[in-house]
Amino acid sequence: MKEQNAVMRPYIVGNWKMNGVKAMLAEARAIDRAAGRNPGVDVALAPPATLIGPLRDAVTMIGVGGQDCHTAEKGAHTGDMSAVMLADAGADFVILGHSERRRDHGETDAVVKAKAETALAAGLTLIVCVGETLAERDAGQAEAIVGAQVDGSLPVLADPASAGLRLAIAYEPVWAIGTGRVAAVEDVVVMHAAIRERLMAALGEAGAAVRILYGGSVNAENAAALLAAEGVGGALVGGASLTTEAFLPIIAAASHED
Ligand code: PGA
Picture (cartoon, rainbow, N blue to C red):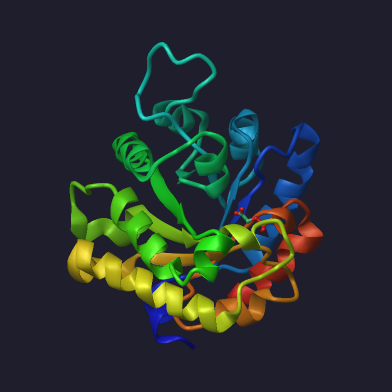
């Protein structure tokens, strides 16, 4: 058993991205039943916003979350969604600063931080994503880039002592997302330790309780090794969270690490 996980339950989160119509609720129900069989693991799904309400009604054991929210609570922002609306639809958490949002929508650390503060005010917990590109890694800048993202994206917490309950970080190297190319376990351990240092610097002792997830091509084959690695508190899973068949072995692997 890892020292860190003695105090923190593993957190396995499926990010469905822009995938999923009502027919997918059957998968969510099966994932929910599997979560019930693995009570030592915190399991959650972030479906497209259109499915948050129906999915909330379909499950009982797992967390339900959004994939983004606006910086404002409401207003003239056609097509956008606020944290208040996500919470109202039944979400408990929101993923913020995913590299696909940073890339497709030009989200900066400052925008992610503003969204994070609005989401906390709406009562949501957060998964804040950080990660370097391949060019940044090849240039030896991965730790500096990710460290700056953590510093710039972290919200100011009204009660910093509660950081572990309100916030998780997902380390997702951009080059590992959806590519089948998973990061080496040794590199993940080094980066998670670097992120932990930043969290401790920003939050003091409370930074020790913030779970740091790994994301990027996690699947049934590589999950056990990643989840057993020092400092890895769970996984943010894209492609392999879309079917029960692919997702359940990852939940089971986390169960062995709790
Ligand atoms: P992937 O996506 O598991 O499909 O690589 C992970 C993510 O983007 O959260």
